[in-house]
Image (cartoon, rainbow, N blue to C red; front, side, top):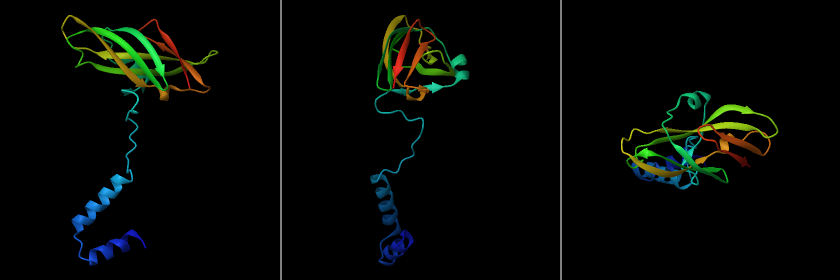
Length: 157
């Protein structure tokens, strides 16, 4: 019996249409109707990494200091600092260039982009994690070269 036939039977049993729609909506949510938006972040990381050569070259580049890098699974944790009031208004992105160089170990340049319009003189340290799974290339590793730092880190997957 199809959905149309079931709805016809329910309708002819004097069940109001609003209840039918509420039931269908509830069932849809219960079984996990999803949008699978590509911009969603996994629960493990704070943000997704953007891959765009144009953004890599042109995104905001306010002054910051990268203090530490650590990879756990597909999350890159970056500890960084910049001047400001409290850092709550900072706009942060991790951007990767589309270009990949292929010596022995593939290399990809990434850049932590910061827009910081805070005018206070405090020095704020923050930590953010970024999903880097979209930076994988052929093989099982890529060296991530941090453009606004002297650092690099090997991402193995």
